[in-house]
Length: 238
Image 1 (cartoon, helix red, strand yellow):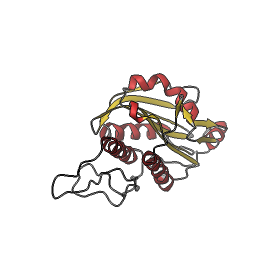
Image 2 (tube, helix red, strand yellow; image 1 turned 90 degrees about the vertical axis):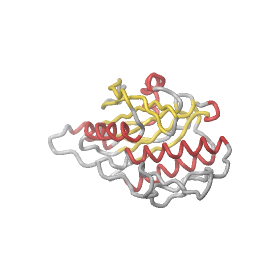
Image 3 (cartoon, rainbow, N blue to C red; image 1 turned 120 degrees about the vertical axis):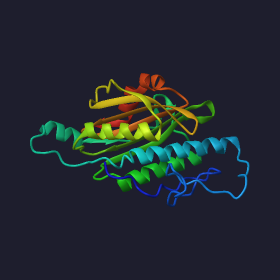
Image 4 (cartoon, rainbow, N blue to C red; image 1 turned 180 degrees about the vertical axis):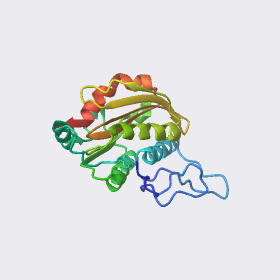
């Protein structure tokens, strides 16, 4: 994987999240956080929650960028049908995901738009990208997707690299293989935690795409039961 971008995208105002620019060099985790001379001003609970979500998105961006994906042409020896299928693979953010509507909160929509913008800048040879939030944050029912399509030279390596990064950035444990579904490729899911928020994380890679689904406030077991359905709504072949 290539290195992720050195400057995270500008996120929407959230009462405490940095507005773009280079990560603060004083922060060991690479995410810029404003420095205060005294105690920070009080922030409404809703904005504090949004701020945590933004920081988790930044961590995901550092892991995959999905951008690090090495999208390239297959070698001549590769199966022609696989090449055609990969070239015709697309990803998109559906209107609903496993029955959950896209989040309309302006701050989260701005974060999702920023994620897509960074993927478009970073992915080499991408043919489509997707990034969005789904569910109802007030009920702690929230999903985030990030995916990119393109011909993958080595999907297994992309998956291995993504899993290695996720393990570090999102403190994911028990990452194990799961049924990838009819779209094929490989998929793994595990339990993570970031900014004090429990996460269910699933990542997949095939010869035409690489993607990530994060379910906030839930476990991998919760996400695995819907993973194949969700992936089928995000990724299309032909």
